[in-house]
Amino acid sequence: MKQSQAYKDFKEQTQEIFNFAVLVTLSVPVLKQNLKLFNDKKIKRLPDPDYFVPSVVYEISDETISTLTEKGLSADKIEKLKLLLNIPINSSEFKLRVIDAIGETDYKAYRNDIKRQSKNYSENISNCTTNYQSKLATYLYFSTFSYFEAFVMDIAIELTNSIQIVDREQYLIDFQPDQDTLSDLIKLDKNFDPRKIDRYKKFSKKLKNQGYINSEKLLLSSLLDIYNNKINNLKANEIPTFLEKTLLFKMTKVESDTFHSIRDNRNKIGHGAKHFKPHLNDVINANKFFKSLSERIDKHVTLYFFKVKNYMDEW
Image 1 (cartoon, rainbow, N blue to C red):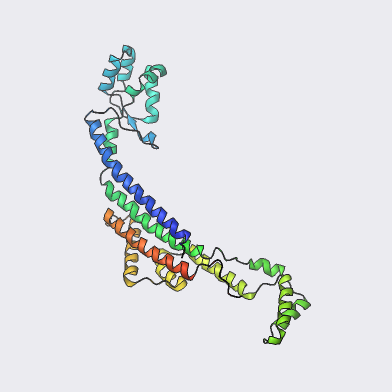
Image 2 (spheres, rainbow, N blue to C red; image 1 turned 30 degrees about the horizontal axis):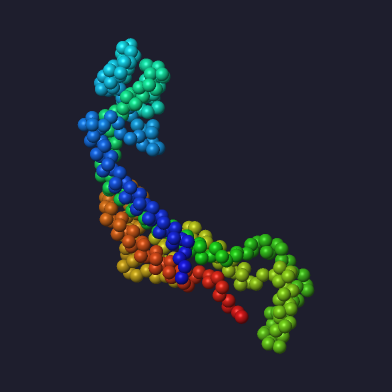
């Protein structure tokens, strides 16, 4: 059987967050190495962030003053720069204050020597790397459950997408039967007589041309509205019951217990509780669980509930 789009999306989303996790666990050690080189003055600057550039803090250091003096910046401008010595200044303000001291022409000429991140900035970045794996695990754990939650809702909605829902209120306005139409309905509502099959076809076609809709379609549309409303308001703790009662998929006892355990932990994270701190191993285990469970759900729903495109009830 084909896979649902909801399942394909779920696999793609979970793969993306693990790709991101790999990127972070690769990048942070490199950053720590650069921080050490920067603090040991073996490199002059740290790479600026791609987006949060305003968070960068610069300062004029003794080394900056020495370099600019050697490169010939005038003494009066050196003295003005010394007024900014060892003062951490954020990115947007730093440029303005330096230009105010030495002028825009010299700022552009010596920019690479002037723009050096402050020690305070490197310390702040270093502090951000503390327990980064625990923080990363927390974000991933929360996301993994949320993606599974979305998968259940998406697959439940996807299976009804091909079913056309009747606008019942508009139908009641549009279909106003006259006496002839009511007479035709009465004729069709009598006990079935196989000798009158052609008569049934004739009056059925006539009613259909007048806009009559089978009552089963009306009822189905009403039930689908209730079903869709339930999905839109589905709570995480209701997922196992919804799957069992609506889609006839029953979790095993172990699956149900594991699901609720992860859900409880996710709620603790969401409510800011600090006594649950997942490790990356917890994230990997949760992902394995949801990967296996979502695959079983997808196979079950696509087999029993998804429409087979070319299947015909009648020949």
